[in-house]
Length: 156
Length: 156
DNA sequence: TATTGTTATACTCTATAACTATA
DNA sequence: TATAGTTATAGAGTATAACAATA
Image 1 (cartoon, rainbow over the protein chains, first blue to last red):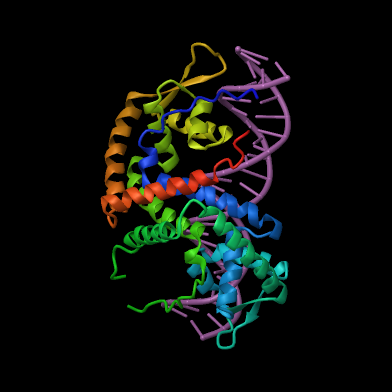
Image 2 (cartoon, rainbow over the protein chains, first blue to last red):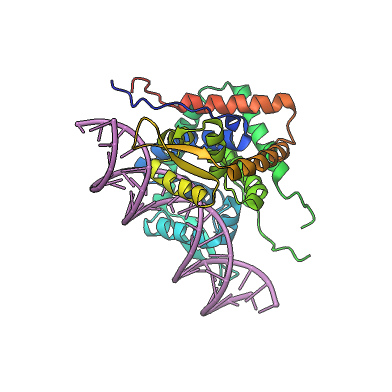
């Protein structure tokens, strides 16, 4: 029972800074996600790529990276791994010989099925403390914060 | 004016996953913070350490790391940098010759003054799309989500 | 024996420059 | 001249094991 006797320090205004509160909540939610998806061998980014390809079959690699906010050079290794594991493939694009049309394999579609079930359970856990109205309010406020900071210069 | 002609893909259920929405909002808020604090030479973690030492002068290094959720080995380099820049120091602790009592230098306190002004302006920017009640609601919901995921086993 | 701070290390994520092959 | 994909690389952030000094 011997507790480490760790003194709890005063965090001052930190918990009232939006960035800090967001970071703490995000870390907690991601920890649940990572633990839940570890048996499937999927990290959050890998899951989002499989999902995106399933919804947009044949999409270009650069469009996929752009949609998920992943830089193209970093997306290459991600796709390499999914392809090596037989979950997705780079098919040749019809019109442009430079680009790849991304597709799920049958194995990838099958894994994504399990992932969809896991994500439903995960989502139920991380929103367990919120009723439907509160959850909807939280998403609304998060989207508004993000949108208000996006491209303050709309002329570009 | 020639736009890059980037196709906008369907993100499917991703925006309705709490972890994804949190991550997007957190990245946007941190981008504002990082840009605002770049002139002061402070990253988010460095600012939080200076703030914590100011509020808890003489605190132990391990307590500071624990309070901020930073692992002790990683905190060492953080403190090394702040000490090398003359912003904070490791004073010898009175009762325990193993531990350090963390303190701000005058220079560190002075920089923290500017940082407090910068953080006030930053906070006003990132909450500009929310009224007082909405901001308070957002903090409440974030804290509740985090707390509901913390230590599901309270016996440890 | 356990704790404080430290070193060494490794893995993930992120970011930029430069290359190739196509357009 | 520009784009799609790639390589190489570098920097943060984060994680664990093991050590010396001290309790």
